[in-house]
Figure 1: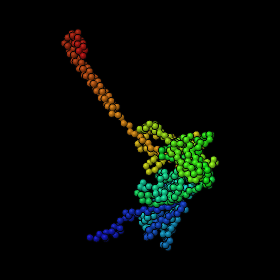
Figure 2 (figure 1 turned 135 degrees about the vertical axis):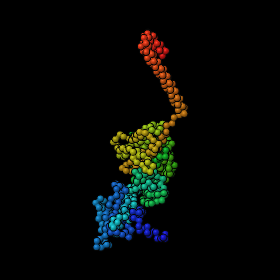
Figure 3 (figure 1 turned 60 degrees about the vertical axis):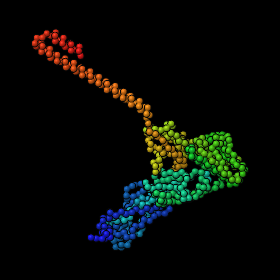
Figure 4 (figure 1 turned 60 degrees about the horizontal axis):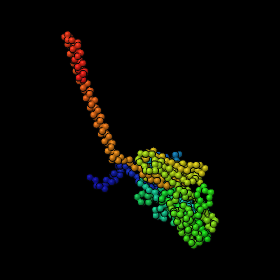
Length: 500
């Protein structure tokens, strides 16, 4: 009997090639930065091979990229025959069957290197993941503005998670997954603490598989600036207005004018050099606004929380009575009908409304599917149009119709994101009402049973009378044959009817 250690090589020799599982090696690249080289085993054996590819995007079937074979006379020469099914300009032939993949996002996918001569067996597998940032180059940003960054990965499996980090710590900014493979990072009111390195990481069970990095740097405006902020009216929302001048001034103040108003702007807050800021008591902001740090007559920052839908409009920062910068605030709110609460099975109407449309954008309702959000309905709003809202009708709301979001997109970039959680309750019947229904049901059951009993009894009596009638008729016929008086016969029949 053979020893145990001799069984290992025997199994390796006699098992078919399909019995061996080739481990998939994960490979990563960043679009437009650096491609990857897929290196096959050194001792590949055989004389003919093929590269096959299943793309992450587009067609999902496996396609052949190229056929590789040894030269007939010189076995150190490998010849490549690229197929017409792919863009061969995205790939390059390497030494001894190796292949180089150029940093094009669409090149991501599962690559298989297979021997076809003298037999058919898989020699290597590579899962190539592509990362891309949008925008690719991060320009400097102004203090107070909003910034959105986009990280897209060619494939995110069920077991994987994408997370944005700021200086190696989880970012506190709003982030959400969209269409499974894209993760947005929305930073509101950029300030000095917002600067630094940001990374987009692909993880499994808190283990980082790969991450890409970029940096946010602040720009100090040398000239008066104007920008737009979008804010929802949820309790957690806030507006921060930063006004920082290059030189010192005697007075710096913030004022506000409602959108579409022809009246003069009303002062919200002001501060004299080296003096604390004063909040104006005559505006509707007075209970929700507080000043932030002011430095030597050069800056004045306000914090408004929470913003209301009516806060939309223009905010002006004046330095020594001259306009230095301005901010347009567009507010966003959501409502649900019926407003008194939802019950499972009834119709629900979700309406998202923006205060104004100064530039073309898309207003959308998104559904949260646990791992990602998908657009359920969207509409393009334009300054020349009259539409300011978008309504989504849910014909029969269920318990899983819970998490929704209203978003403003400019192109593919979200500018505002308002989450909405619905609570649909099951319909319950009260004990008293249920008891009443049971009593009514029992009464109807007893009544019907009694009615059926009486009808059956009458029917039985009728059948008995008819039987007697038939018997007497037969008797009468026999009596007639015996010459009995007809009058006596009919008298007997009449007596039967009277008794019945």
